[in-house]
Length: 90
Image (tube, rainbow, N blue to C red):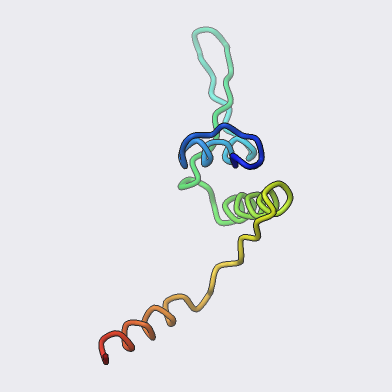
């Protein structure tokens, strides 16, 4: 992100930066009528919302950072188990 010109100083700031690009929740102050928008928690996103969030991250990384973020390995558990067996047999 620094290479793209952003002065973000922590992983948490990068996380918040990307969350702000997603649809947000509007919160009403009943006393004043003021409405503020806050980013949704990624933990509260449904599967479609989170998949969209990840795709936006990948697109941004490719376009602005020249970094490709690969799709997750669907067989990661199998590879983990294979590596565990190799390590224990040595």
